[in-house]
Image (tube, rainbow, N blue to C red; front, side):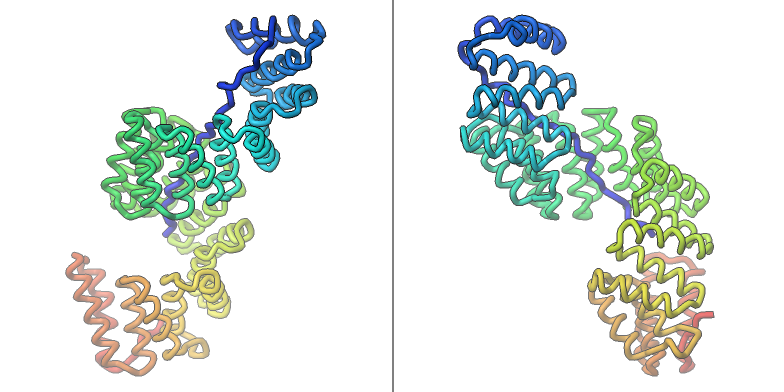
Length: 463
């Protein structure tokens, strides 16, 4: 089934160098008294820039301040134009480079932003916020080690800044170092106890470690602190789903959709919950909505394919797996599951190719190894069976993941390889484990049929 996504929804928070001021700006300081960006722009334009101030530092300061006002209005091109003018007049002003870097960041032109932040730091190594902002630009380019280095420097300058710990935590998270991420969120929360975002992402990190109860507790606090945070509901829903609490998960996804109906992730996750409840039509409806919002999201096609597969509509499933692979050519899970769909149609050659590709992309993925082992152990066409190879694959899969389905495959592989004593031993072990897990009679009956088959010296064949 589709993996449930614990996805951080990043809120872009960059900081301007507002603490840097210009000395000797004369009448331009009237802009400080402006009650709004529009008033500041009007004052700076009329009283400073259009009057043709003779002193370059005064005129440069006016452009700098008007650039800042344009930024507050979200008009980044105009801000950059004013910062350019300021730098023509005063080429070595660190704060102008820093603020222009901010504007480039808001335009998602991170290379230019990094160049400006770097120049600002060359001119003034302790300029406020430049290290933080460059760190964030590195982060958005997935240069996590560089981001962490800049956040470290920012914390040397401002050791009690909760936001910097939070953002360094994001970098650790994306490196997969969840313990370090959690340590940074702990510090952020210590410094700012009502930091809803830090609770949210600490909860997501705990979920990544499989600590779903703790994750739910943190995400609940995040929701209490910020009831309109749809992302917290999405991720708490994912944690509920992992706990098997599908109705609670769906309730959280519903609330997220109510708050922000244009987040595709909500529909994707709710679709996964519907699959777990066996409500495949509703799952497909949600994946359709996710695809409408994010038509190039490979995992939405992957999820919808899983729903088609569960409904035994294999052609539709394969079409969606094809699309997910087109969008994400290294999508090992999609290759694996497309292999399942081919195998269900007895198209073994295509299935083997897909399982093999999934294993090539992720050699330690237990379920891909298991899928190929099951085919080689049980295929109805003898030309595709290989008992010895099936045993090898199933053993490796079991070494990677202790799973009852893999035990079943190993027993079938032993039987295909003619080792019925091991087949019986392994299948009996599987049934004992299922009983301890509280499996129902119908499930136990299916596996017991295979046990009797192995006892009679016969291998299992897919029908």
